[in-house]
Every structure is written in structure tokens, then in C-alpha cells.
Length: 133
Image (spheres, rainbow, N blue to C red):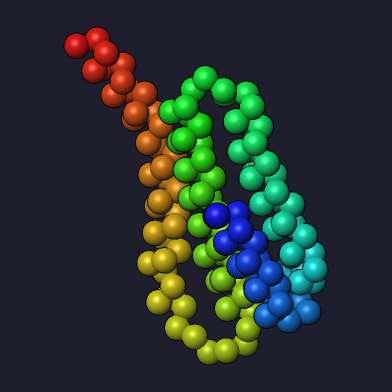
């Protein structure tokens, strides 16, 4: 479901972008790439991350806890990419927009990813402590 959502976000973002996409902007200059290049870079990165789900499922057959955590990690990663693709698309749209309104959403997606990443070591620590008691 999250893979389908991030794919829809990528296709929608690609369709709404101009021919050149600004990926970094500074006072003196900006870095621009074609929207096709942006699309294929993001698609390749998403493919690699989401293929890991299938690889991990084959390797970690016995550890249901780890597989569940890893699937959740990939979902949080996809949520971050949905937000990031939406931001890049909005930034390159040429419309005037108060970007500070997006800060909570961007930071929340990063915080969700970080919290989920930390959850596995905390869970393992809890299992060790509660198992010894």
C-alpha cells in the first residue's frame, strides 16, 4: 500500500513539474536537473529500498518481530518520500506558497522515521531486560 502511494506521489509530482527541477537553491546559484533525471533517480532509490522488503523476507524467515519492524521502517521511509516529492513538486510549481506551513509535516515525517529506527534497539533491550527478570 505504501509503495503504491509513493508511486502515485512520484507520478503526480513528475506530471506537475516543469522541464527543469531545482533540487538545491542558494543565493548565488542553484542546482537544476531535468525532471526525467529527477524521476529516474527517485524511482531507482525507491526501488532499491522497497526491494529490500522482499530480500529481508527471504533472509529473516524466522524472525517475525524483525520483519514487522523492517516493513514499518520501509513504510515510514515511503511516507518521508511522499512528503519530499510533494515538497519538491510544490517548490518547482512557481506558485507563491508559505513554505513554513510545510515544516511540521516534513519534520514529522523525519521524526517518524527516526523514532521507528530507534524502536528496534529499544525493543531488543526491553526483551533482554524483561527476559532476565
